[in-house]
Length: 105
Ligand SMILES: [Zn+2]
Ligand SMILES: [Zn+2]
Image (tube, rainbow, N blue to C red; front, side):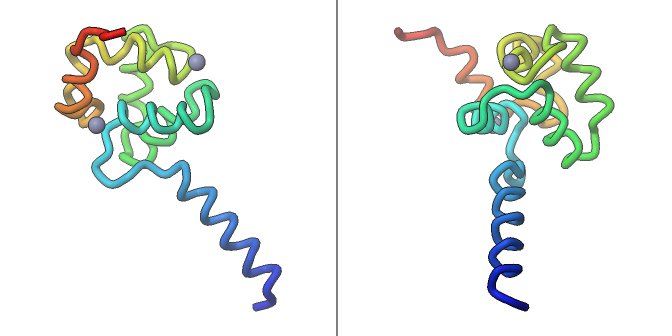
């Protein structure tokens, strides 16, 4: 393989890896990480995470039903406040503690 093609393939797979959910990473931490790095792009990252976990349908339904209807930051702000979010690996115990911790600022 010529070096240019090789470099292109490395770049492509790196880009895919950059937005890939980590193994066992909950949706909450994944979204925090992605929005921090890439900003809000609709439901792009919610969909990506859900697709990776093979539960796109239920997750989008959950997001829309809990106030996160339009984009990933709404999911963070609204959806994780609903009790159902602890199920299905959407929110890990650590994330839950973070959300419940009062703002110190
Ligand atoms: Zn987490
Ligand atoms: Zn947004």
